[in-house]
Length: 168
Ligand SMILES: Cc1cc2nc3c(=O)[nH]c(=O)nc-3n(C[C@H](O)[C@H](O)[C@H](O)COP(=O)(O)O)c2cc1C
Image (cartoon, rainbow, N blue to C red; front, side):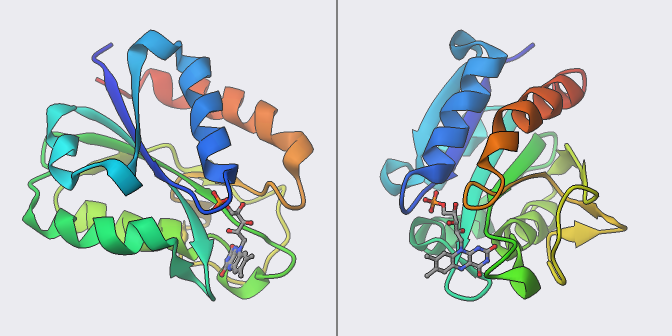
């Protein structure tokens, strides 16, 4: 497998923690971790395998580092790239806009020509609305450190096993 560039933005550390767990699951030598607060969007182009991690803030908004980073995607050609997404949100307090940031990033990735993998079932969550759901599945791994943190580790293991064969 080619190297993976994992890019995440995190306000209070939950997405950062999940990013480290995902890297450990792949084997740390296979993954380069980037906190997007300190990264250039052009760095994505160094990788054919890209993982993007984001929490949702405000009411269905991007986390602040993603607000700054995502416009840089408009300059990128992501064709030929395989992209997997994961998102952190709170399905109880933000049930109408659960993980919306992952939906926003998904739209941008597909607009720029990236091929996404890693859709994830909605079965074990309770929420009412999310732009991260397309054709009945989340567009990437859905994590909720606020209400279901006990499930995070197993979800990451399953998701990594699922996407491993789909990366380049
Ligand atoms: C003020 C505030 C607004 C939030 N807005 C949303 C939201 O709109 N949708 C959602 O799914 N989660 C929302 N959350 C939950 C966070 O996304 C969640 O706590 C996440 O784990 C934070 O990850 P981070 O520490 O990596 O930024 C919000 C949390 C706070 C405190």
